[in-house]
Length: 140
Image 1 (cartoon, helix red, strand yellow):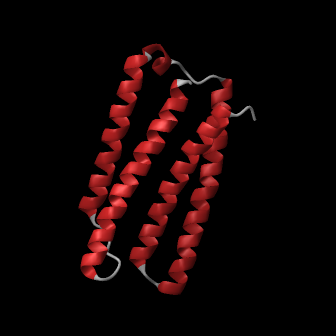
Image 2: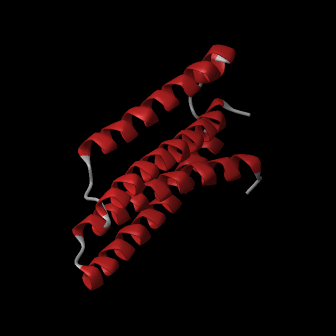
């Protein structure tokens, strides 16, 4: 398994864990208000800090066990994998934004728009990492 595939695994797990953490914060705040809570800057900061810490710790652990792999540049196949995964992630992000905007046209709820676009960003990044893993594992 190459370092870049390990990195995709680390980032997908870190993003999933941080997203669940953030979702729980928003759900708790919403339950307390009785409606969808507005975006809370401290919660977004906690989400970001959790992501950064998980990513750094994961990458440091992997780099300790394989320092030469961590420094290796992308080969031709890996460049194609990254390009294809990024392309697919772009479509997922676009679909998430368009869906969020469509929902906004019917609800006029700015908080829901924010969370929809934010969820679209998270899902597109997860899609990118998962497509990378899939392409590393298959001979496409």
